[in-house]
Amino acid sequence: MVSNLGELAERLNMTAISVTDDKVIMAMPVEGNRQPAGLMHGGANAALVEEAASVLAIQRAPQGKIPVGTELNVSQLRGAKKGLVTATATVLAQARSSICSQVEIRDESGELTAVGRMTNVFIS
Image 1 (cartoon, rainbow, N blue to C red):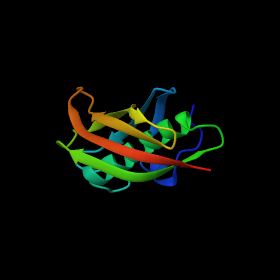
Image 2 (cartoon, rainbow, N blue to C red; image 1 turned 180 degrees about the vertical axis):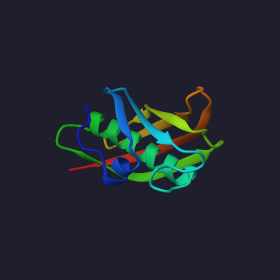
Image 3 (cartoon, one colour; image 1 turned 60 degrees about the vertical axis):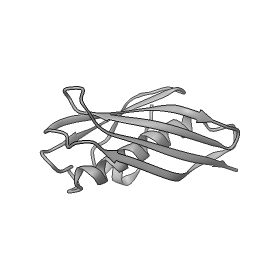
């Protein structure tokens, strides 16, 4: 399980629910139209996509390599209601030196609120 998330992830109260080599599931509380740190949904969703995709990249990194985020795209589909949103990160493609992950964010009712993709490049 992930023991140290980034500072922003901790401020947004993100938690890792499940971490495997193929999938990362994280959750974050929402309060109306804002996250705990005061970010609007779009900014908080981007942080959640980046965190989930980064954790997945770390899990899949080749021995001795470090994943570095190089490109992040997030589409905000609709705002989540008050409650918990869940992000599920899966691998779209992986090469020797990079990984592309897709992240879907759903609210408590299971409705899709945002989707994102992140490409990480592995460095030594």
